[in-house]
Length: 172
Image 1 (spheres, rainbow, N blue to C red):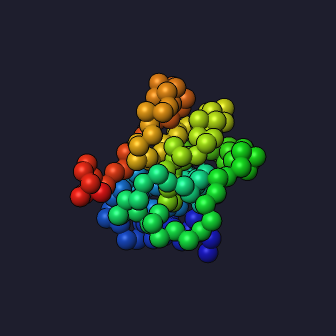
Image 2: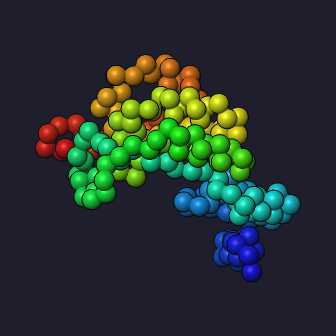
């Protein structure tokens, strides 16, 4: 049985009849799925496309950070700290666009997006692909003032989430 049939079977068997609850999963993004019983044709098409390509990709272009938040795994990281090459990033964007594109998240597993020296260039590259329809990222915002925020907001970024541990030394 292929992945499409497996996931379709799981969903239609275990989730309540008319409503599919919003479930965030690294491979599948259910928030776009509607009630199966009301629109079976759309439901089937959505599952087929989900099984053919990722709905969203998260890209760790750098694993550097300028903070040491207690809730983050950055402090326990043992991997070599590095930045993804622009060539590899361009290939990734091209390949993702050829697969049909969708949203991208420029948020490292550990680290801060804004530390990446090519951050603005990466946004510009992603924005050149019409198939990439959404760009989001998380940051601790410590160096956000070093950037032209209007340029970021006009570049195709649709969401900036700020993650912070606290507002004073004791909380940090």
